[in-house]
Length: 168
Image (cartoon, rainbow, N blue to C red; front, side, top):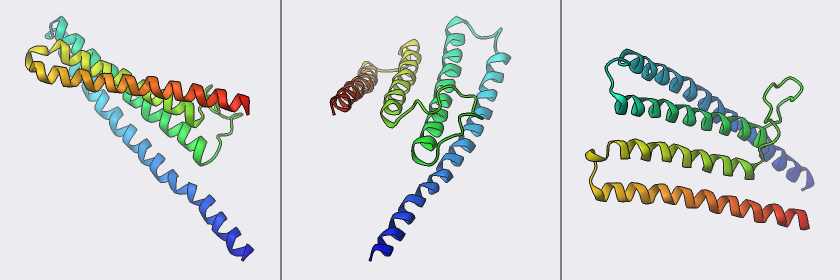
């Protein structure tokens, strides 16, 4: 019976390597998103002398938004792989934050990134407020505030958990 238990535990532990398919899929998605970003940048460059100030600000916010989304994907890939699959060899790695993102800090960073992305989207919407009804603006603002409240609560819960770990 003990050998069956050991076999089941090895299978379960080895199953973490299945996550590699997801992380490689995120790498491919990030590459596709980079192509999309380059196309957006090309469109902005084409219209640099055509866009007025408001249109240029909206275009730049779109590029900033894309960079934040790409950074979020990268952060999830690296920290997820390191937390759930295998540690990176830090001697060879040139990324300073490796080994510093545990699952708690990852949740906070992801929530913060979502709030930042949501803020940019909301700013873009308010810069085009004439295209939206008051009701739509209200619900979009409430949705953003829900993201903010969630991020704050995650941070608070992480602080409580850290204090409990210190006391234990």
